[in-house]
Image 1 (cartoon, rainbow over the protein chains, first blue to last red):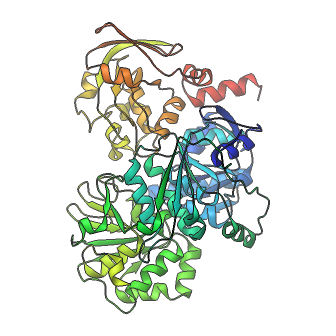
Image 2: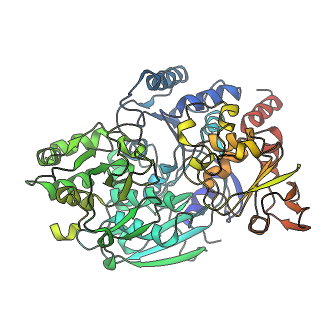
Image 3: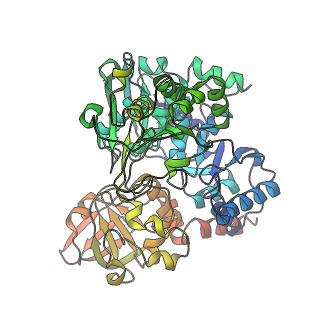
Length: 418
Length: 167
């Protein structure tokens, strides 16, 4: 039977020749991820379930990112409980201040093409961009995986997105995925996998593919996948990782639907509070005043995002009314952005850089937005109250749109600044 | 499993912040969470709901964050079952893992109104509306997930499994 990429991965991990949508399968989990906020709850449930030893300490990553840097003693307790458990169980993949969990799953090679990856966060879908079946679960369920190494999954139907052509200068993968979410709605892919293909995907950097996969959950998707190629192989080769299959969907696989996009027709897009599917072309809100600009997150905090923004603000000054915050997605990206001069260009223009972590995106720390103010932001969600006050307005946009709007003090089109 | 109670109807896209607002997440005590259940959707809900009652809602119930506090709050408020046109994916899993029965049935979600007397049989996927003399057929709950519900959620289920295997 012909299968989609999601079906192929799940069949392989369920030790079956084939699986069909709707089937419940028990699969072996390749790697898990839990972060500071929920780790103590996973530990508590793990003990309550009666487990003594984790199934495999080498397949568990514990990453501190939501609470870094801690702002009170209670948050430090999260670190202490997590570290004590990791030490007792021999878990060594612990990152206390190296960056955002989803970026590290990719950067350190914990998530590989063809893997089944579970994390206690909805944006775990990010490494679908390299061809992993990666998805989010609650903390109690994570405790069960820590004990058994398995999870049951319902094989999802797959929505296929064929994107042909090339993006115009000033238009990025972020604009594409915002457009798609606007088209299918915030529940358009609920219970389903989104699979992206077509000539554009091969042209995109791996970083941009991660941006697309990352936001598939904003359409409700269980996973957002792309078949790996030479660019993906190269990343893993550099890490010394070669033991994974290069799975591809079958040409005659059965899809719930196939949608086609012409990338060359895309324009810069935005998504405005209160919902991620409230998507429109950027020109519809052009001229709206912004008080803050955020460049960061597991969606768009990677090196090329920061370098894109730096190239647009270099030698210029950010509008005096705008506070621009730059948060690299990882320590490695931060170092690279320092070496490339991107950090200097941003800081000289008037932005400031915060520690590589979730920062403003989680709304827990780092320059939250006041009621009545508008922020233009490169992250992934704009629910009311997520990034600060319950009436703060969040405009989601590409890194280029964020950078030029910070210069202008209002929403402007990056294509006019190239 | 069977349950019977009065229906409380909500709209579409009820998100996890409406079910249990983030400002109450500093506790995981079920009773404390139950006191604020559905607060931002209907501030009087916790005063009106009785043990065994059901929540009925439109599509995409439980969208938003991955917080397990949402099904915990609903279950602890005494709600015996949630019927909706559809559920957000992570909420769907979390509900079973917390031992909160849920059924997907667009037909029932559209027809049932607040105050209706509803009886549910999970094994058969059958919903009977005694007030309107109607019967709706929901997607059946797979046997494995019924076991989860019968055990009271994933934690007691895993404990049972481990005891059976003598671990």
